[in-house]
Amino acid sequence: MSMTVAKRGSRPFMTELRLTCRKSLTLKASAALALMIAAGVGQVLPARAAGEGIVMAPHRAVYEMTLANSKGGSSVTQVSGRMVYELTGSACEGYTQNMRFVTRMESQNGASTLTDLRSSSWEEAKGQRFRFNSTQFRDEKATEVTAGDAARTPTADIKVELTKPSKRDLSIPRGAYFPVQHSIALIEAAKAGRSNFRADLYDGSEKGEKVYDTVSAIGKQTRSQPARKLAGKNVERMDNIVAWPVSIAYYETKSDNKDALPVYELSFLFLENGVSRNLLIDYGDFAIQGDLKEIDFLEPSKCEKK
Image (tube, rainbow, N blue to C red; front, side, top):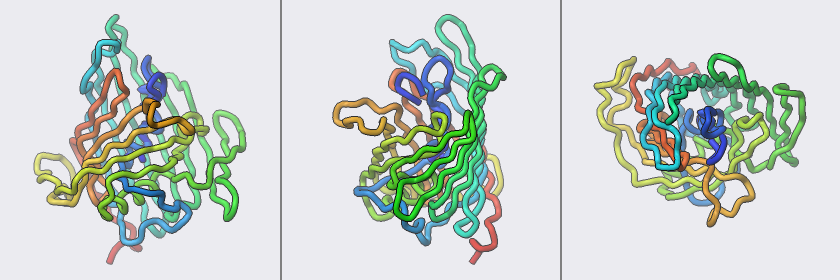
């Protein structure tokens, strides 16, 4: 999901489940959680064309979100909700991601908070341009709206034009990846047999101002189990697909990863076609799991058909 979509004390995107916990069950976990990625050693130049031969399968997936665990210092006692993620487009027309993430969280004192994250983005297939917008609701009231457009330049940093929450221009490092671009690079790394991958990731989270330093670990290649219990259309396309267990840690940029704690960690089983299963978002004092319940594989664009 790079999903969209969590600060260890605030923050997906996405990470905010922005309730009382982190300001992050919002976009980052959204992009991350949305596209869910893999990894590999070394830095792949993001400016180059997206991995040729790798096809991100257009699909609509529904995940049931629940509390996986809660440690002693956490006030979170229960989490329930649903995430609906949709990926459409192709390598010739670009990729569109739409996500809605609704979660209810309950605390030890009995308080209940409902959060609703809605995000949409379009990304040029070669990673040259990225448009995004998201709205965060808390108890049915909009608390944050973000919109912007990021574009690469031939020689300079990436230029970002924000239109919401206010008009503002900023620059981010030219080496940063956009979400789909990051996902494709991670699949490439996994297919190449790499075991880890480090890269900066920009997905428009944190009011469009945040770039995260991501460190990914890829497990041993496996095969997906039969998906006959899943509801949806063409679910047999999930059977016996090459997959990798992946774990991605999100850090503040310029932090010393040897000592710093990640903002959050995202783990999942990442299928070769871009679909993710067995999600786990760990915020340190509590963790949320996402179980895939329904998936519809959508018809690809004509340029994807062979």
